[in-house]
Image 1 (cartoon, one colour):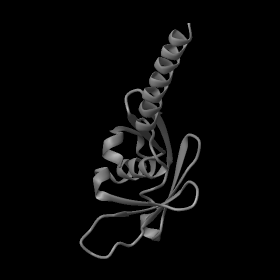
Image 2 (cartoon, one colour):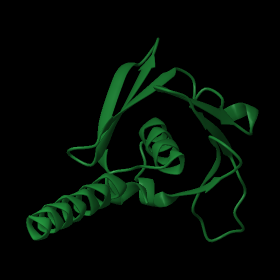
Image 3 (tube, one colour):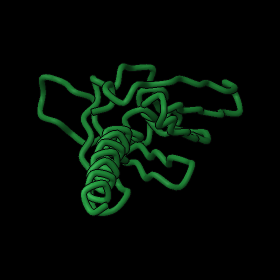
Length: 132
């Protein structure tokens, strides 16, 4: 009786470890969500964007270049929205509009939607691997 209880405990423990690894692998950081939002806004690939997380949900973003990196955008992730701000005045029009995101953990993807009054709605889906 004790042996079967031990075996049952071992099976439960092994399955919970397996589940926790799957959940951990299916997480996406605020950096990834901000990269997806800026990539959609600028119509660039997420690999062309640098992202550095600050304290909390604040992220600084820049486009990768051969020159010294200058942070051009700041990003703040909320429950279902992303706030992008441009450092330079001339870029404010690029980040204008409402940006929302939806994390699809089962598919390991994040869908980003931008609703801009003039241009309409733009939606794109990125795989988690693209955003790391």
